[in-house]
Image 1 (tube, rainbow, N blue to C red):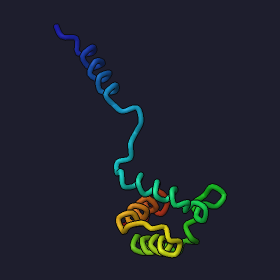
Image 2 (tube, rainbow, N blue to C red; image 1 turned 90 degrees about the horizontal axis):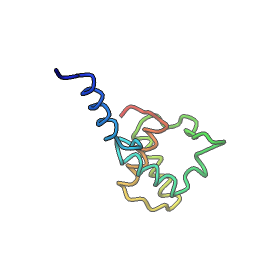
Image 3 (cartoon, rainbow, N blue to C red; image 1 turned 45 degrees about the vertical axis):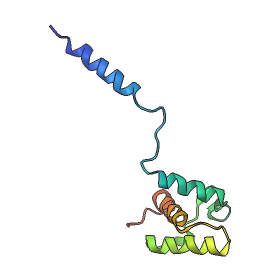
Length: 101
């Protein structure tokens, strides 16, 4: 007779051991946007007392957020490509703003 309890535990053990030791974000774009944000030292102006400053809620939608990211990039001569601006926008929205798309 087959002992299903042992088979179930063995299957579970194999499944758990197959998982990575850390969880990667579902979307690498968000991670890349966060790296760009940090590399450009955006937190110098946008992190106040350890909290992200949402610019007094001036950002109302994702397109508006993208415009702010572009403005910062251009005025501070960061030099992001349009794809990088999109990654930073996505990072900011997914991490802080949570605006509808």
